[in-house]
Image (cartoon, rainbow, N blue to C red; front, top):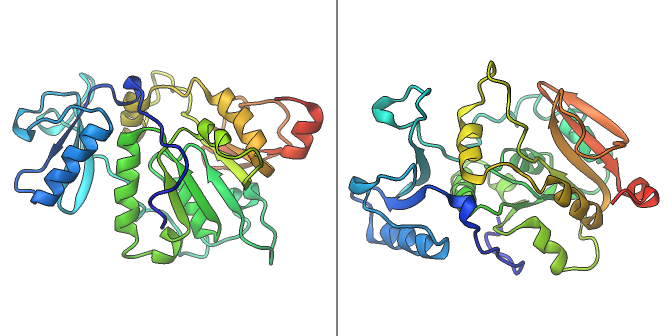
Amino acid sequence: MNRDSDFPVRKPHATSTLGVAVTSEPGASIHTNDAARAFAVRANLPWVDVREAASEMALVFADSSVSLHARAAPDESAKHGWLRPLVADFAALDISSPQGRRKNQPLARALGRREGSSPLRVLDATAGLGQDSFLIAALGHEVFAVERSPVVAALLREGLAQAAATSPEIVARISLLETDARELTQKSVTPLWDVVYLDPMFPPRGKSAREKKAMRILRRIVGEDLDAAELFAMACTMATKRVVVKRPTHAPPLAPHPVTAHAAKGIRYDVYSVVALRDATLF
């Protein structure tokens, strides 16, 4: 896995890390403490002693992990007032069963690789905790995972490092870029990727539907993706073949006129032909 790149690194916005402090686990090594303090400085986040942590969320560096601890909301049940730590973990992803390896599964079909063709270069412009990046890499593609929140990127970086022990061939196909995907257009004037993949924050569910814990915490960190339309316009200039947008099943398309859609449980992948979009001058 390529950890660093020569792409521009985004200076974190205050709203991206609101209420997050950085600390290290009691008994952590000097190296871990130094890494945690260096991260706090780079991300412009407060460093606190874990015993004094009073923030809404704490990014905790330990010798063997990096995790995000979030206080429970008033309507959430949690032991001692804290939710279970959030980490980037790929162990539950199905990449080994016959079903998980199918080349005609919805995600694989949305990406568009044909049997016998070369692997695709895919830009995951909204990587988050990296679940989709990992699945795309497991299909054999080269993935550039972009995450603009320094807190989420730290979780993903640690998760990939952990996964390298059990799935080195998959992790080797993933390059993590801590930047804003929109800034990539400043680095190159020509498209670099076959496919640009977007998974903007899903619209909030109704009061009767409860979001998964990870999504609730991520929403508290990064807020809503109010620039999703701008990201889509960027994607159309950076892809050579197609743009794929992940959406909830009943949500409207992010942009009009997808050429096709591939449904999975609770979600769908809207596919946009770059050639058709440019001909229609939709962006």
